Image 1 (spheres, helix red, strand yellow):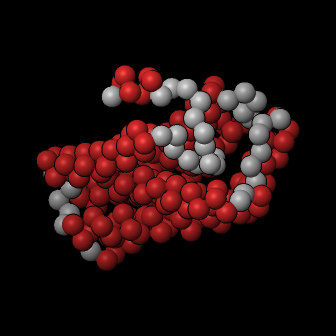
Image 2 (cartoon, helix red, strand yellow; image 1 turned 30 degrees about the horizontal axis):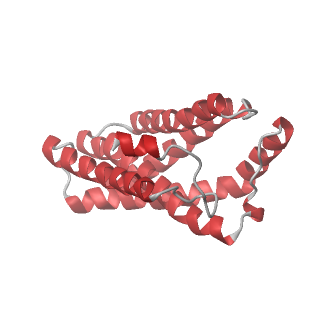
Length: 199
């Protein structure tokens, strides 16, 4: 597979911004996604990470995804889009406003956004929420763990982008981990509160 990937590492025609470049590229994408799901499920079963039943686990993931989505959409619409576009413009970084995206872009962005919330909800459920329900930890501990999860995720995003892309706004290295941490903190704490009340 490595040799195949090496042979194809040359410019490929693309229909749009979010297209894979070849058949092997599509295979890498889907094998990677399926591998992630398989490992999460297998390790969760083998480790007995939580004593909660599957209905509680699925409820924790679902509630967290819904809360995460609602808070994130409000935050993005009210603040983040304007903040990000402002600093993209100031730093001369390629700007892609939501209002200017074509239908092809939007058709691919929706599944990617959905995948983002699946990642965030799985991480919060297994690392923060289910252990909090099992161990009856207080909400300060839930808030701390939720914040660290979000800070780590968005910190990776902003720092990797900052060293990978010319003119990427360094302001985001400060702001994105903070906002991501607060988002994860809020979603994790509210989901834990709901699940404890229901189950």
